[in-house]
Length: 234
Picture (cartoon, rainbow, N blue to C red):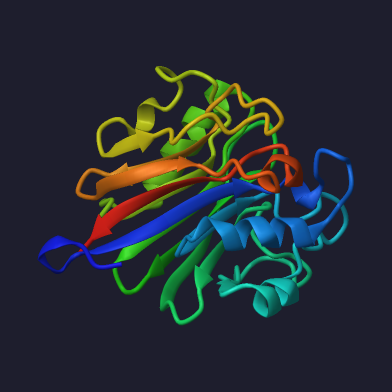
């Protein structure tokens, strides 16, 4: 979508797919695919995209994504061959989107966490993450992500399940260089009470719109609802 002065609008989304287990306790990747196709996004960050045990096989098969959507997964170079992402984080981009500089970030904390980073279309860096359950861990993890930006944020988006219930505390490491957006309450899908899923934009990026996907399908496919923003990029 074209914007003013030759800019382009991109829709970015984040979705904790709960290993494709819905509120009926049944694992149905096809439902997740239906929700993904309905978002209208150009890039989607997924959390809990892999199962937890053994080789961490993908809960949402890459072959299903390729066959039933217009997305392709960004392949994490260090991940196990059976996995879709890194520590459960995956990034889907529209087919034909150029990707480079893919890297994994292992995060500190009391439980295993990580982030996946990729540059798209030569300039916009996307970082997908799922932060820890303890606020002290989340702050350390955000510090670690920022340290991996190698001295400059550039045009960067950090998106994922931030696991932060407060709207005022917990994300202080981002305050100087990022604007953190909460598109709406996304958890619990059956009765949304908390804006756990957020999207942080480096200061030079312009937010145009945002929201939460609340279709009937989305309200049963996972315990989180997808969130999205439209941003303007040069």
